[in-house]
Each structure stands twice: as structure tokens, then as C-alpha cells.
Image (cartoon, rainbow, N blue to C red; front, side, top):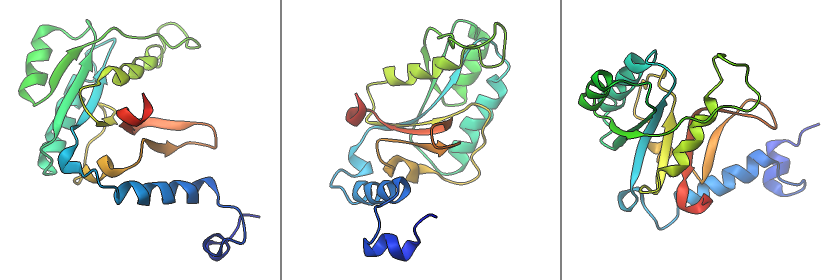
Length: 175
């Protein structure tokens, strides 16, 4: 049986991973390094085809319409033609060419064959913190607060897996 909130706050039982994360998050939010002094950016990735170009443009528009003015970086491979790169750039993305990475356990030509390409985000080292968002997401309201989350944050799918559709990465604390 999981401990109750009262048991956790009274210290009578060992903190769960979730409570430990909350404590770390609160410490991160109160740190002396403020968002104003950090270089932060939103980042997304396009690889293997141009199927998600319109999604990436819509994502950029939704980030801007939410009121965010942070940089937006789009990582892409050679499958994205110059014609689409121009449109992506006009939408506000700062483009960076990357080599894609094949997922070692994927089936050839499957939807997730090149999902390991998300690891290229770690090569964006000229920023302190990144919020990665899949190109098929739309931002409904300002999510700049995500930049205040600790080190590596993502939504869990289970105890051992996480959803990589939205991730917060504090690069200088991880690398």
C-alpha cells in the first residue's frame, strides 16, 4: 500500500520517487539562477520525411501565440528539402542539420525506425536548458514555466519508461 500524503510529509515513511522529484523541483525553482539569466529554447526534430513540416509550422505558431519569445530550434536531416526549410525558417525556427540515428530494435520502414534521432538534441550545447516538443504537438497556453523544471523532466509511461514527446533538458547539469 502506498504511503499517504500525511505519512510522507511527516517523515514516517521513506519518500517515494515522486515526492523526491517534487522536492528537487522546488529546490530548482528557488535556485539563484533565474530564467532571465539562462539561455533557453524550444526544440523539435524532423527526420526521414516531410510529413510533419506543417505540424512543425503549426507548433511554432502556437508557441508564439502563447506569448513565448524564447528561441525555437528545429533539428532536421537531409530529407527536408530547401523549399520546406525556407517555410520552417519563416515560421521562426532556427534550423540545424543533423544526421539521423536508427533505433536498433525497430523494424525497417516502421514509424519509429529513426526515433533515436531525438538523441541529437544533446548536441545543442549553446543553450542552458531546452524544452523538446514533438512536431505534431500544439501549445494551447504558455508553457515557458517548463524551463524552470529540474535537469531531465518528462512524463512517465510506466516505472521504467517515459514519453519523449515533451522533455525538459538542463544540459549543463547532465553533460
